[in-house]
Image (tube, rainbow, N blue to C red; front, side, top):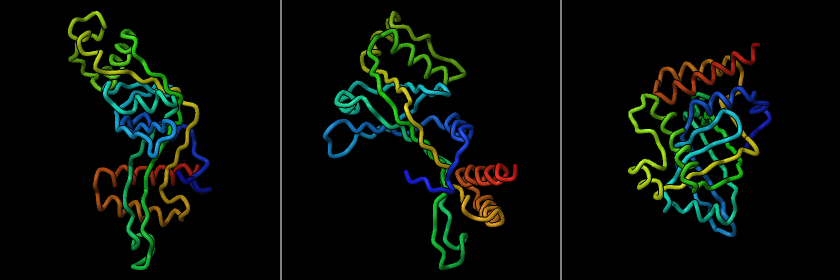
Length: 207
């Protein structure tokens, strides 16, 4: 991911806040000697610091790649919006994209132990189903015991973070405020999320 001088420095609190609100990304497992990495879209649970956990089907090709090399990248992005060239300049303007992206470089540990796998599944259910409505996950439960062998858990220990909030910080405040107004006018959910980031970074620059 290209990070230009005007994209940095990025306050840790900014990318952490983004990652707390975005819990779906792509696991990228390069393996060893492959022509292309294995890329798996997935929900995940982040502990707010240095650990990510989730599960995948036992048949997923990511396991072979992780067996070859237990390293992976978790790529998470959001708040993406197309910015037309005429918003940036006039009919000769170059279009761009606004977006937020966080990439976590990780050491990967595969979890097959039934108790630890059940704990990962319990954490996921607690995160994604705060309303409950699920049985407690234990490997001793007859129905869970029949289901757990079909999945494997993955624990990612974060070793490095690259983050970028690309929201026109190389432009003047007046220009960014004008783009924010255009995003509000266009009004999709992603436009409004991008607009919030534009205005937040303007406010941070004034502090």
